[in-house]
Image (cartoon, rainbow, N blue to C red; front, side, top):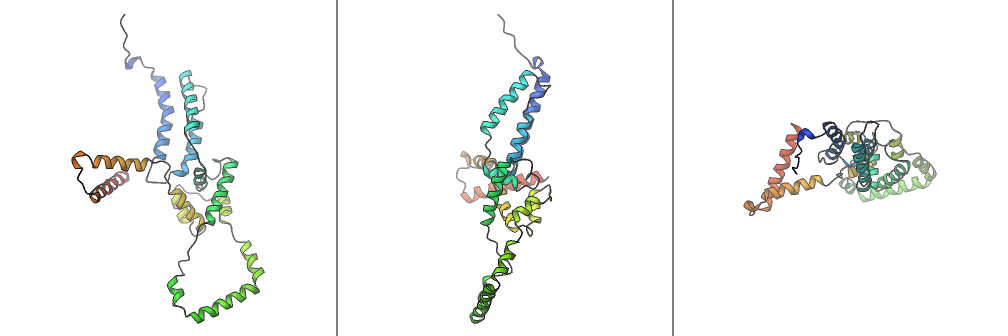
Length: 253
């Protein structure tokens, strides 16, 4: 009995187009979350939400495509882990602070942001230890005594002033400002919300995936092979540095 060999002409072209259209969303998501040139942690939650939406069955789906979407959706829920840090990063993107997180997730993220903001220690650049130490001790003592007496006398008024101070988290959540670049947004708002700007730098500097470090290890493996096993560590570091610069230049071009 002769076995009939299948060829490309036997393929269902329409079915392949539908399959490619579904998988294209995963390719886009992978590229966005694997970047090492721009922040990506704040895109984890919206990426999962968008993929879940794209995997919903449609009226025109055939049985094969509908079954594939169902299995991909199940695997997505099992393997695509979203953690509180991702919720916090999403909250720090002004474009995503509303409409992406559920009420519970948003409430927890706001609480985490408040806690993180309380840990920020701002330093006034106009004051330095050198200037403070240069002041005569007797004069400093006199000024401190005066400040203490004023604090005691106006204690209730000072407390009321502190009570009406603007809360950075509430001010940010109620704002409607937005930009296309999240880093540019927080750079521009550094004077308005200094503590939140610090929090944004801390959180958004975390990459969404380990792809960038895996790229470095792959480049190191190709650089330090059997034929170049005697390279000095500083030479390997220099080559990897140049490799990173060449990749950055090619992306800019």
